[in-house]
Image 1 (spheres, rainbow, N blue to C red):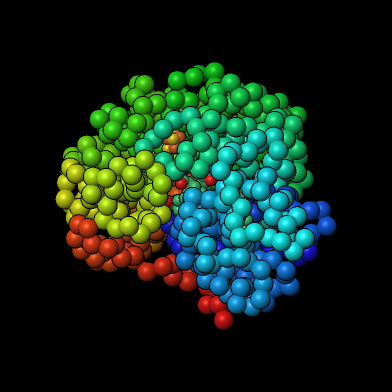
Image 2: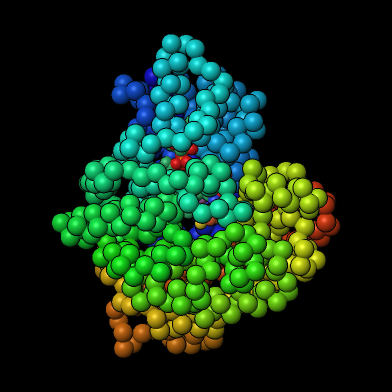
Length: 528
Ligand code: B12
Ligand code: SF4
């Protein structure tokens, strides 16, 4: 049997990092589709499987395949639909799966021959057996959770890993907390499940054999099960020692990691260089409102600086639009992000994702703007009518906040504020000297010099002449900031925003991603 698995192209979002990818040698996307590599490993051994990621390469319009499987997050749904229709129209058996199909399988009934909803470890092999017998069902729905010890080593060999900024792997699924807006706990539950350390070791061996240096543990919350997380980190420390620190890791974790100095030491020893944390707000009333009580243990600035003091950088998510938020909240967010020196700050408007408790509450309160699903939390629109300020004021404040944070002197100030507290990172960049010089050259040429003297001065003010050990951090920070600025300038421009009357159906705020560069032209080609 021949199976083609496709990851549809994403519309541009905060995460796309397009500008940064153009600066880095040979990279076309941030992370590979780990779900597809996992699915490929669940196929019978005699099946021929190919993975195509439309974010790095064109999709074959007339593939040699019996089945075409297309995955997708909600933001990919429009393209996923196009691809399913295209391949179905050409007589292929089409299969839909992935995040959005897991959350909302009902949207796919008419679009695919079979929908696989939920974790696939148990149900996908059933589909394969049924398909071979000629009796595939229209829906395979995992309504329970799977034991991650039953998850196979993903077929990393089917991914073109050198085209991504870093590679994904996963230790756990699920998170014990209960943030009101979160769809993760709806999909993966509140009891974190973990892989065995042997499984992780096998996955690392496979990645090492493929020459991977930067790896992202895409867990919902790596420390969701604290004792298991400590075991993992100890294991990773030993693995790294044995393999001469082959990897630089990053992950997602909850802020309470800062309250465990022993854990922070282990993170450093295992060579974690960054962590993404949902900070959301520094206002205790908003945190309580959204049930993010794990962020209330101590002053958040103290927590972030403690993490820095272990040489680990913090990327963070922030939300505007909680019921307790007022026009003052923009200033509070600005002040915190600046003092904490968080460059990669993903700020979004509070959005009610389908099936979440927040969605149900807002619907009950009659404050949903639209019944259509809204899936990208970094757009200029949301489906919630805010309580503490008019909708227009919230959107304008949001744009102004991004604008302010992306001024040259603000970028520089955040870098200095971070370096004041960041211990020398334990990691290596993983780039060869020649590539490193190329990156610096392109940053200067395409990013710093075009900003004129004002930006050059700001850039120089961040350069750590007396601390060369963090020079690569400064370079990475400028690349991240200018990439965000490029995104914000193209996507968050006020003149592209339509008025947002409360309760009106929300149109897309800006057109879908424009063709990027010549190398993407073929990828963007409309399907015949
Ligand atoms: C890693 C990750 C990313 C990475 C990499 C994305 C990529 N290329 O895959 C990055 C950081 C780039 C990213 C970005 C975004 N992400 Co993201 N991301 C994740 C994360 C943390 C892990 C995904 C993963 O790899 N899981 C591991 C694999 C093994 O599991 P899986 O994907 O669930 O796949 C299983 C099944 O779904 C199934 N399956 C998967 N594919 C297919 C296909 C077929 C045909 C079949 C049959 C089955 C099947 O089999 C797998 C094994 O059980 C998830 C959270 C989560 N836990 O899912 C969010 C998540 C997928 N992201 C989400 C979002 C919203 C985004 C953004 C839009 C952020 C934003 N601005 O709002 C952007 C969009 C991407 C972009 N480039 O712009 C949402 C999607 C919501 C939804 N239901 O659609 C999630 C669920 C997070 C959340 N809180 O809601 N993301
Ligand atoms: S900590 Fe993160 S993953 Fe856990 S419930 Fe809250 S938002 Fe969801």
